[in-house]
Amino acid sequence: MKSDKVYIFDTTLRDGEQVPGCKLNTREKVEIALALEELGVDIIEAGFPISSPGDFESVSEISKVIRHTVVCGLTRAVQKDIEAAAAALRFAKRPRIHTGIGTSDSHIRAKFNSNREDILQRAVQAVTWARNFTDNVEFYAEDAGRTDNDYLARVVEAVIKAGATTVNIPDTTGYCLPEQYGEKIAFLMNHVPNIDKAVISCHCHNDLGLATANSIAGAKNGARQIECTINGLGERAGNTSLEEVVMVIRQHPELQLHTDIRTGQLNPISRLVSDTMRMPVQPNKAIVGANAFSHSSGIHQDGFLKDSQTYEIMRPEEVGADISRIVLTARSGRSALAYRFRNLGHEFNRNDVDVLYEKFLKVADMKKEVKDEDLQEMAGAYIAAAITS
Ligand code: KIV
Ligand code: ZN
Image 1: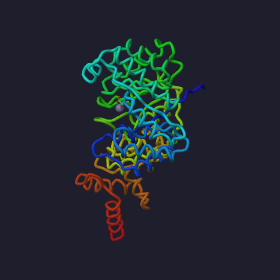
Image 2 (image 1 turned 120 degrees about the vertical axis):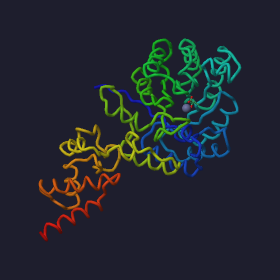
Image 3 (image 1 turned 90 degrees about the horizontal axis):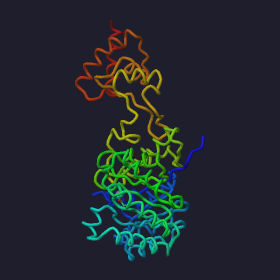
Image 4 (image 1 turned 180 degrees about the vertical axis):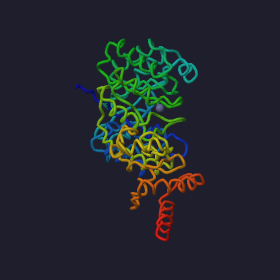
C-alpha cells in the first residue's frame, strides 16, 4: 500500500523551552538534540538565535554536533533576526531558517498596526532575505488558525514564489476544531497554484486539548510535516505531542502515512526531557505517562490477563515503556490477585485465592495500592495458618 512520509519537526528546544521554569543550558540542549537525532526526527528547531546570546550559542553548538538531521533557527520577519540565525547555523550540515509573521487580522492590527498588503510584502521580503543564506527556508503564518483563508492562500502563494520550501500553518492559539483545521489545509492544497513546490506543515497548540487531533486532520488533508514537542511541552497548554502523533500514524495504517521515528525510544527520551527540564509527565499522559500501560480495574485486568489486546492497542515495548503493570486496588479482581501472587512465587488454588481475596479487600480498602510487601505478608500469614491448622 502506498504510504507518504510525514516529516517530524521537533520544537522541544524552541517552543518547548519557552515554558516558564524549563530553561536549559547549552550542554543540556546539546544532549537533548543528540537524543532527538537518535530518535529519528527530521528537523530539530534548536532555538531563536536573536533572542539571547545563550540561545545563539546553543543553536551554534547543536549545529556542530548534529550530523544528518536538519537544524533550524527561528526568526521574526526582521533582517537582523535572519542574519543572526544564519550566523548561528553556519556550522550546520543542513541548516534551515524558519521565518514568518502574524497573518490574522488580530495580529496585523494589534501587533503590527498594519494592513494585509504590507504584511504580505514583509513576508515575501523575509523569505527573500533568508534565501540569501540557505535554500532551505520555512515560512510561518502566525495565527493562521484564525486567518481568513483567501488571504492566507495569497500569502502562501507569494512566499512559495519567493523561495519558501516549507510553509507552516500554525494554530497559534489552539483555537481550531479538527474539521476546521483540516479544511484550512485542504483549502490551501486546492487554491494555492504553486502548492506542489512546498511542504505544508502543521504547528498546533493545545489550548483546547485538540493539538494532536488537529495535526492529524492537517496530515489527512495534505500536510506532510508536523511540528511537535516531546511530552507536548510548549507555551501555555503546550504543543502537539510528538509521541502522540507518531503513534496515531503508526497505529492507523489506513491513513497511508508513516514517519521515520524509532518508537522504541519514545519513553526514554520522554524521561530525559522531563528530568532535564524538571517538568514531570502527568501519569495518565498517552504513550509516556506512568499509567499508560497500567491496569487496575478487575474487569480490565481479567481481560488483559487472558489476552493483552483486549485492553491494549499497542505493546509497551513498541514505545520503550516498562512492561504492563497489573496494579492492585480495591477495584481489582481475583485473577489479578492470583497473577500477582504467582509473580511472587506463590501458586495458590482457587479456594486459597477466594479466602485471600477477602483479606486482600480489607487491606485494599485502607490503602491506595496494595504492594508486593503487603502480598508477601498476606501470603506468609496464610501459609503459616494452614501449616498450624
Ligand atoms: O505558535 C506559533 O505560531 C509559533 C510560530 C513562531 C511558529 O510558534
Ligand atoms: Zn508555537
